[in-house]
Length: 400
Ligand code: ATP
Ligand code: MG
Figure (cartoon, helix red, strand yellow):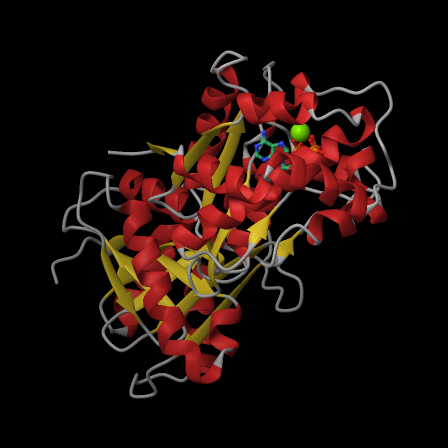
């Protein structure tokens, strides 16, 4: 390994719940590694993913600058299953090299010039290293103190210099950025998100990806009776969400004609809930083809008339698959804050003509009776219609 004083820039990842998963741990680590590789796959340089004990080190090609580590850190910042991301320096397993790197790390820092308090925190994952953690703390801390004259504060330091001794190398860093937390995408199975162009459903998708579901996106457009705007929006949303899982797929069902039939069937007040049941039935058919084990919606209790307890019950009744509603207990303000944080809010706020604007009854039923809904469905032949709609599915690929 040829190295500068600082060593080689790399990115060090701390795993979340993955570590707790006992027997499944290997599966989890393998999924996480694959997800990380997919997330950095198109950066234009090789990223070597090395599993260490409880951490993952991302090594960059020799001669890489800090800006490559920044680019990698930015990408993995979206990957569920990681709780902490550090831009670290990788140095040889030698106390002198570690000290040198720590000194270099604090050079030219504004806070160091200000004289902030500091502490060195070492951890040994390889006990063969000549110094214990406590000895390393004291020796490196002493040197830093000599050179920069910073006060040591072990309890509550402004600046922590972290040192992690590993099998093949030592990592030295300060600070870091929090990761998404949660579980690696794919380790909980597959789900199908019913995604409108609204604020809620993208947040619901994010929540379930973070619990380990790989999701496909399904959008119902009003085509041929509306423009394709809502499809562009769904596409942009799916792209934004693709940063969390990679290789996403968007599926679009032209739903306009089916809505006309629902409208023609009368029962103005039941039209919205009727169409929601038809969406769910269609989604179930699509899920069967995609081998997805759950449907996901952005419902939040009481937010709109279709989301009363009775109407949610009527929706559950329409399908055999579980409907996951991760936003059920959240306030709109909380959902909006999360949409902003994950980068979907701006897209959701763009104007569009969603298929639902076609059916806007003067007064929507808040307590739909399942028997009434089933009667409408018999007239529509809803089961057959759902199969037909699923057959008209169009796929939009998001990358490459
Ligand atoms: P959102 O902000 O997600 O659009 P909303 O508050 O507008 O939700 P509704 O319009 O009642 O609420 O929709 C509830 C859920 O039904 C949505 O979160 C979404 O999962 C699903 N849904 C509604 N319209 C569509 C659509 N055109 N395509 C796919 N799913 C839809
Ligand atoms: Mg909506």
